[in-house]
Image (cartoon, rainbow over all chains, first blue to last red; front, side, top):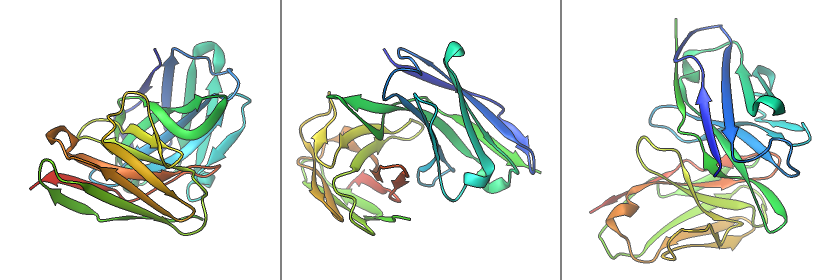
Length: 124
Length: 106
């Protein structure tokens, strides 16, 4: 059974750096085709993709946030970490990590399992 | 960057109604499109991928169609538990979501 769980601070100050951890179980971060993504959703607004990291350590970032984001993984700890620097109140959101869907010998950047999310508030 | 335009933004329908949501891509995305359902306070749930493939365990009243730039998501007979917000998502090396459609019961 695949599970993902986000953890990190609930409140951070403007200009600071946010670090969130996704702890996974039920799959290996090094399995061929595997990917874990980070996404967020401001209160009452639409979903926004942030980044994805693949089994081979390749990474893709949202073009609009690329300069502020870093995604890494620690296979031995079953964790994927994302950092977002230079925080602003508009970064207030629920942050989710999610598992990349694989099936029938193919993998896609669509997400079949999600964590419950962690709400982060950015304040001055 | 590819933009995904989803419509309508909100929709009211009666139990048993056929409900349709559309998603328009700003350029050809082949069939790299998913549909999600999100209920309040919960993470999104994947319903359909590759434009028309039903995720395991998802009721058959949910269907998807389309390719290229125009996509459609349909609920053939609306049930009370279908009240949620629905999102389309284009996936490739860059991932983009539509703005969502909030569906409620009339």
